[in-house]
Length: 420
Image (cartoon, rainbow, N blue to C red):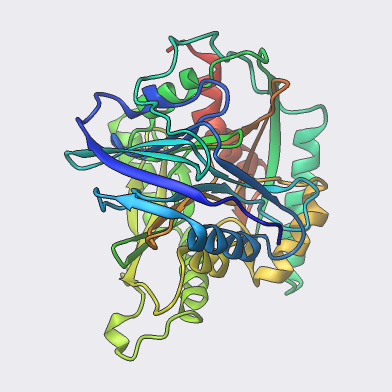
C-alpha cells in the first residue's frame, strides 16, 4: 500500500443550516442525506481507487491506515463528525471500472437539531475555511433516459433464460437488470438533480459519490454509536392510480406468494451474512429481523420491507459489515455466487456501481451505506447510464419484469426530464 498523507481533521459545531444540499459541489457532489439530516462533502483531501477482487477489504485497510496517521480534533462527537470517507463500490468486483473512496476537504453535517463542519487537510497544508454555500446554481442537467436499441428484446431474453435456469434448479432467484441512457451538458450543475430527488423522494437516502447519484430506498447497513440497522427490500408492485386501486395493489403485494418468497430469500441471506461476523456472547445481542415484512410506501411503488437490528459485532468495522452483506439477495440472488455469475452472463455488460454499496465511514466506527438504486452513473463528459432490475423467480413473466424496471427508473428519469 502506498504511503498515505498525514491528515489534520477539525470538527466544530455550527448553526444549523436551512438546507444541507446547498453545500454540495456543482459537478462532483458528495452527499448522504435523508429528511434533512446527514453529510455533504466538498473538495478532495485524499482520493483512492480500488480494482480487482476484495475492493471493500482493500478500502477498509486503506482507511484504517489513514486513520492511524491522522490528527483529529473533534469537539462535536456526533455520528459523521471527525475523519470521514465517502465511498462507492462496484456491484461485482470483477468489473473493469474501479471503485472510489474520497475524503473531502470540508464536510457539513446535521443530526437532529445539531450541525457541524469538519475541515480536513494534509498536516503541512495551511488551514482552510469553507463554510459558505457553493456558487449559485448553474445549468440544469436535463435529458431523456431511453433504452438502447434492442434493450427490451435483450431483457426479455435474459429474463426467460433466468426463469429456465431457476426451473432447472440452478438458482432459486436472480436479479436481472437493464439499462437506460442519456447525455447531459458536461457543465451541468448536478445539485438540480439532488434537489429534485430530495423533493420527490424525501423518505429515501439521497446519495452522490464520484458521479453515482440517486435516491435509494434500501439501507444496506447503518452503524451509529454501536447500533446496527439494515433494511431489506424485495418484492415490488406499482402504486395504483387512485385510492381503491392503490389499496388493491398493496394487498396483492402483501399476499403474493412469489414476492413473499423473494423477500424471504433476501432476509435470510442478510441474516446469514451478518451472522458470520457476529461474535456476541449473548445471543440477544445479535442481529434479528421481524417475523413478518411490512409494506413500504414510496411515491411510485410499494415494497415488501424488513428492518434488521442489533449491536455492532466486537472488533468489526462498518466496512466489514458492508463486505459481508454485499451483494444481498435483493439485488443479486440466491445462491449468491451462482446468481452473480449468472448476472454477468445474462446482462452482457458491467453494472458498474449500480446496486453496489455507496455511503460513508468514519474513524470513530460509524457509517451509513445504501444500495445504489433508483439512480444513475454520471460521467464528466455528460454521459448518463441508469440501471433498473427485478428479482426473477420461477413464476416471473418477462413483460411484467420490464414494466417493473420502468417503475424503478422513474425517480432518476423524472429528475432529469422535469424542471425543479
